[in-house]
Image (cartoon, rainbow, N blue to C red; front, top):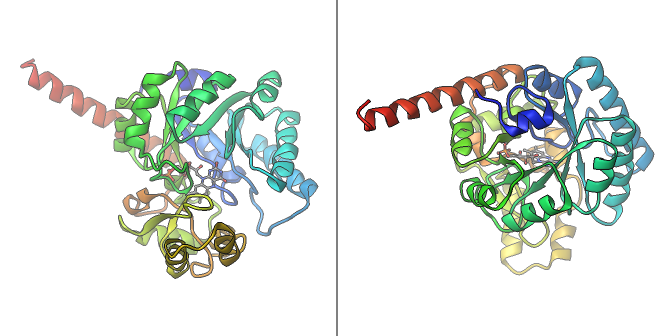
Length: 335
Ligand SMILES: Cc1cc2nc3c(=O)[nH]c(=O)nc-3n(C[C@H](O)[C@H](O)[C@H](O)COP(=O)(O)O)c2cc1C
């Protein structure tokens, strides 16, 4: 596989970025991906099993995870900083400080505008990747000075943009509109998906759900088993009034949707939902009272593998597809 601008920018061999997944993407997974030539990303609340409302505790946990990752790999890795609003911003500010103090090479900024951290991170010498879900926001991030954008379709697991654009239509429009590299996210689970988005002009892939099904991922085994069982229609995107998120379908989510369609207000919906439903599923393995975030591509993944093998298989698969397409092209030209 040829190196892309994303490889040069990040100092990695293959343009595969393991996307952050709150609670379940800690040092072991991050180091395994980076050691295999991709870029691992520490997500929010790495390697912890309970919620803390103390900003300093959350920051210390992140610092420990960064230091542990450095012990496990000498390769570049990233930390996710979700910008957030209100109270959440206090946490992101403190975590952003830790990321700069610990001289993490790459920040992946999501859930908020690029105006908040881009300059501070760039001044501190970090590479900055901003996660977007529309061409408008991707252009805004470019104008703010980020090094690359992730364009994430709403096939993806977890929270996504409100515009419900798919990866297949978002990526080429962003590639046409931007000068900086575009990294495609959402629904990419194997070499076929990787080759497809590279054909659309992406210079890297941003992969969450495929890495959920790895030995090194900290997700509760019940979540991994449910993801293996999942078919094409087993995830659903919900929460249009309060924050669109894709999770496994269950009675809780269907009840929420019924209320939403029935006209419930955002406040009523928030009260019904309560807090930490995603953590409840991912960490505690409660698939009834929790909401297991995962992408629609869960239906494509049938086994748990080592993260390094996932990286290598994706590269090999993408190379095979590319060669096949080249030979089809040559046959069509009578060569
Ligand atoms: C379990 C889970 C948790 C996630 N948590 C976060 C998060 O904390 N921060 C974030 O920016 N994105 C989060 N995401 C979104 C991923 O970073 C990424 O955009 C998405 O997984 C890509 O699509 P895919 O799952 O189809 O590969 C999460 C996704 C999943 C599946």
